Amino acid sequence: MIKAYDYLERNAEFLKQIDPKNLADQELGELIGSGKSAIFRTLGAESIDGAGIELGVKLGISEFDQMMLPLRLQAELTDMLAIADRAPDLMHRLPSVIGLVTIDGQGPAGVIIEDATRGGKYDISSVSTSEDSRQKLAIGFAGRSGLDEMFDKAVLDSGMAFDIDENERFLDFTPSPFRINPHDSPLLSRYRDAAEQSMGAITINIPSNSPLAKAIAQPAGDKLSR
Image (tube, rainbow, N blue to C red; front, side, top):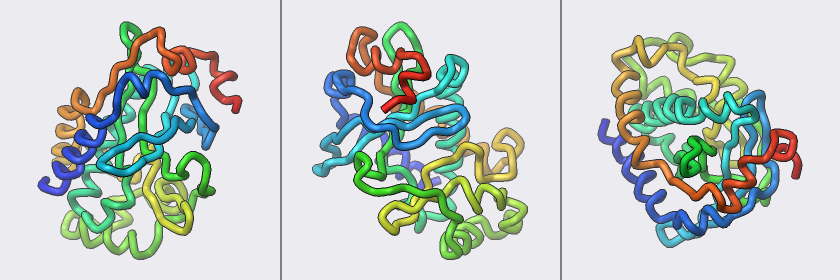
């Protein structure tokens, strides 16, 4: 669990460096991507760990999707921690920053996450997980089961991995790349527990009357427009 805690601690430290007031004053930027239950919009740059990191926000399309954001973040973080711990050579492919944004008195607002496209500067495309990454995953989870038994081949083929400026990144963990349920697996349950316990440390609350909160409260059609 050492590498998993390293990832959690670094992520929490990065989130502490985000000024909640500055974040609340942001407007939703360019639409980068959309799926069945969520969309991804740019937010702008923050100075984190001495460097400018572009941030984006994942928003639920419907009210139900919005309320499900904390549970989905927890599930995605479980998978990230498992990969960071069991295949640490792949940690750099994971988002460098990820957390939950809540609106004061209203509940979940969105998932704040590193914008690997750097505000739309780089094109993003879904790709098949590289053979190098598959080998490292197989080595990291060796002794548990075969790669095909442990991971969902369809998600590895198209879902988790993206190409950004010729760099492979793991940015989407819904659906999960794992075949096994973390509630049934002793291997993943430890990462599920760590993810659940970290939620308070990775949550940023913004005022309900802030520009970002008002933008998030827009109807789904407005969220999808550029």
